[in-house]
Every structure is written in structure tokens, then in C-alpha cells.
Length: 187
Image 1: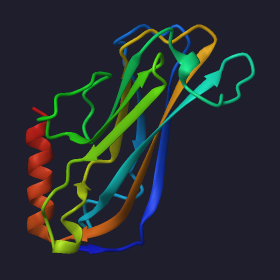
Image 2: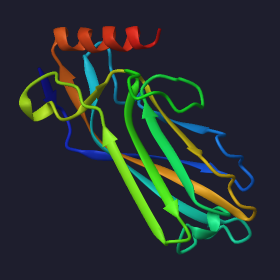
Image 3: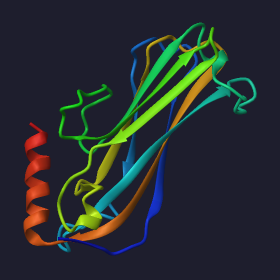
Image 4: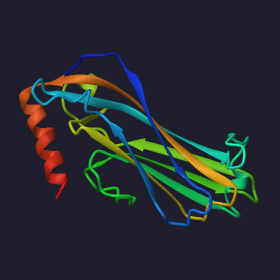
């Protein structure tokens, strides 16, 4: 059973697909959870939601622009994922147990249509109040993003993951189940 030790708080990580990044070239970053996860106390992170924010940054000024249309020369799609195991800078398949959350931004510049979708893959450990969350016992999370179209010159695409979570304490059985599952997913 999971018992909350803190209220919800937000962790963030931002990565950038710099100007000239080629289509299908993934970039990655990490979120350090070492100060929150404690094996001896069976302390884990309970992830409630992950939101993805996509922003165009003007390289010359370093200022965020008002829209995303200038980021690409044409229509584009951007995939972003948070995993709890290091898979390298690749977008993983949806059946990968390390996948915590994924998000997609689709841009149709000609028709001025922007759509975004994000999801989280929850666990079912602990009481009902904790079952809509993803429990993580690893000491890092990994953020990876990739665009289907080259990023235009003079523009960087900034991708920020906003992770709403709390610290929880698990009973021994749940801690072991999650640790074994995570170890199995590493293979």
C-alpha cells in the first residue's frame, strides 16, 4: 500500500531541438530523483501527470516567439516521452514497461491547426487513491523528444516536461513488485 509523504509538487525538465536538427534525430535529458527515492525507507515517486510544453525560441534573441509556425518549413509532428529507464535518445514503443508518459504535437501550418495529446501509463499498486499514478523507484527519469521535420534555421524548439508528483512510502511487497518489474523492463 502506498502512503503519501508529501503533497503534490512539480518537477520540470527542458530539452531543446536546436536549429538545424534533422528530422528523426532525438534529443534527451534527465530528471534527477535521487533525493526523493530511498530504498531503505521504501520511498518512491508517485507521478500523477506529465504535461508537455512546446515553444519556439528565436536563436538570435533567445526570446520565445508567439507561435510555432516558424519552427519548421512545413507540417510537422513532435513526439516526447518520459521513461524511468535509460533507453538512450530514442522514442520507445508503447509496450515498453519503462514508458511513463508520452506526448505528441501535430502542426498543420497551411491550415493553422495545432493539436496536442499527452498520456500517462499508471500502475495499480496501493489504495485506490494512488492507483491512477505511476510509481517510480529509479533515481532518474529520462525525457526524449524528436521532430519529424528538420528544425528551421534561426529557431530552436524547446520541449518542457512538467511532472506533477509526490513522494510516497510503499509497503515491502509493493516496493519489491515495482523494483522487480523495473529490473525486468531493463532487459
